Image: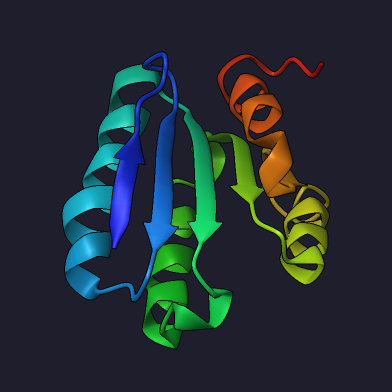
Length: 123
């Protein structure tokens, strides 16, 4: 399940819990990110992983990549909040590979991640 997290309005934030479905992806995440990109012409994105990363089916990662490619020039800041060091390292490396800034945060740094996604500031 993907649940929206309230933000200041210039970011799309979500919490992933339990098994993910295509309906979660297409009915919750994609519309919010698309609307944000249309409204402010950039994407500030936060995803909190309260589930095992392996619970995302490979199809979801492919769909996520397609969404990212469609809006590649609009990515501004994206944060992944997880306790997986591998996922954090991968997210941090994206900054060197694609437009925008990408950061991984540990779960205890959720507030810092939200601040960074919404403002670009760090504590």
